[in-house]
Image (cartoon, rainbow over all chains, first blue to last red; front, top):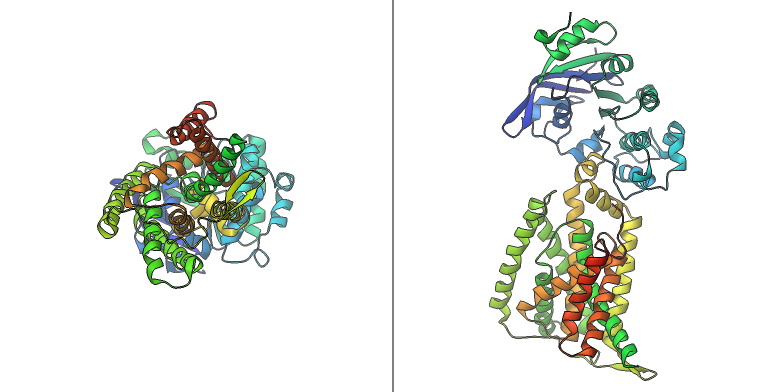
Length: 243
Length: 286
């Protein structure tokens, strides 16, 4: 088996004195789509932030293509090939759709002309953005804003894409539209970590999943092989498991 | 005719204020960093220019060539060693740090240059004037105004159309998200402050050419810069220019009504704008 593109090794972390993660071991193979599920406060977002240089972690706890990268500044990780669709989209307000995209293009290690992703290809993927390209992002609907956030992350030309709760606050129809592009993204060779609260959505979209509970991995396996009972027990904790 | 003259003189004075305000528009308007030492840094650059003028051959042009790089370096160091350590969502730390810096700078300048007022030697440019109809217009104020227009247009274009401008607007809108998109916020902020203080270098030379400067003059310039940015609207470069014009005209007109009223009139107009349109004349939606 080839080496995973991204892995964590006994990752511990949190906010200042508050520890939120207790030794997470996770790996992601090149081109794979995995999900990280768990209830509110399980540590999913904290985990992504720890990988992505936004919270302090020890160097050896995170490896990317075999190299320890823990604690590397976020903007350098982007240049090495990791990108994120952050929770709440976090678009650059006051700037147009295309300007939001161009910030990513400006700073990507690979120029748009030679990268996997360019504006044309993303406008084909999300046709509505082609019409709205000159509009300020705050004029867009939530789903359209999510499309901009995904486009912006992809224009960083990532090998690994971290998606933090991309279905949050969106209508079911819009969620289906957003999730429909994930296979296209992984087909382009980008591995994806999906953080998701919706278990069914996560199971359908990914090959493997990890379930977090109170900062620990309580369950991992092939998404389709795991039973609802096992996931429920891992998701809510043994004592809360429903019969 | 007296009032037309007042308006013209006001616009010309506004050109000087616009040069103070442009750096402020970039730092306070766009980056949301409150730099209380803004005026003191400009006075420092003025005084360095005055001292250099004594030893440097080649006149005012040579002075510009010498001072602007010094200003850029000061700006870069200010961001790198002071402001990048305190920048964040909360504006209070940058306010306190630069307030301390302001006091330290004023005392340092007092120590080095004493409290005397100084100015750059008049090479004829400061007293030259020409006549348009019945109105006399000074050559230096016209040069100041033209420089201000060119700087405003240039800065506005840089923010709109360049890679640096997009990165700065992105980092100002959401610093973390900018980092997630590959922008190095600290480096881009250091560049922006270097530009802001670089403009102050030019303003410092013009200030010492048209009048006198002394170590305690900084806070007054700071107020004019703040007022111009707020009148014009946060985040808008042309707004800061327009705000400086409003301030200049208000002062010149007030001065004609009563020689003691000039500066007060500027502040009154500022308060009136704040009361009626607190977001500023050309506020950009954020």
